[in-house]
Length: 201
Image (cartoon, rainbow, N blue to C red; front, side, top):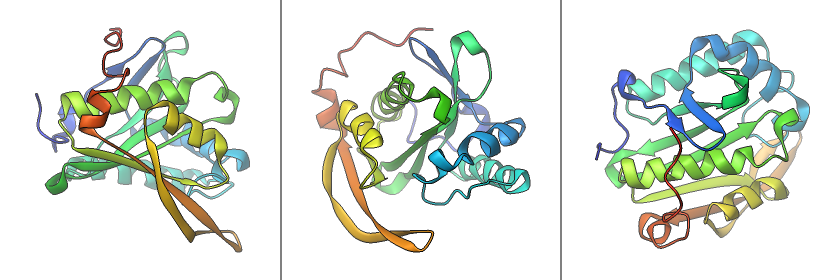
C-alpha cells in the first residue's frame, strides 16, 4: 500500500474503470480545459473558473495542478473515455492534507458528457484509490447548494451531506450557499462500493 498521496510526480498512477481511464493531467490538456470548463453551464457550478476561460489562464491552472502534486498536495486526473482515447472530458482531483490523512474531492465534466454516469464512475474510482490504495482517513467535497446533479453524484458515491455553509461562495454578484459532503474510510469499507468488482485494466 502506498503512503498518503505520493509527492513524486512520476508515481501518479493511471486509474482504470469499466469505461474510463483516469490519467495524470498534462500541460497539453490546457486547450480542452479552457473550452470545456469555460462553458458557462459548467463554470457556473465551479468555485473559481471564469467563463469564458482564456487559454493562458487555463494553462496556468493546469501548471498549478501539476505543481500541487509535486509538492504533495494531491493528484488531478484527466477523465478520459476508453472509446475516445486520450481526449480529456473533465477532471477529478484530491487536494490533500497528509498530516490528517484527508483530502478534498473536486471534479467537473464537459457539458456534452453529462447524463451518462461518467462523473459517478470517475468519483467512485478515485474514492477506491483514496481509501484502498492511499489509505486516507476522510474525503470530503463542497458543492453549490443548488447543484442537484452534483449532489446526486456524491450521494451515489456513498458520501453524506454534513451541513451547509451559508453565503460561503461569491459567484458573480451573488453569494451562494455551499453544501459539504463527506465520507470516512471505515464507512466506505463497509459500503457496497467497497465490495464491488475490481476496476478493469
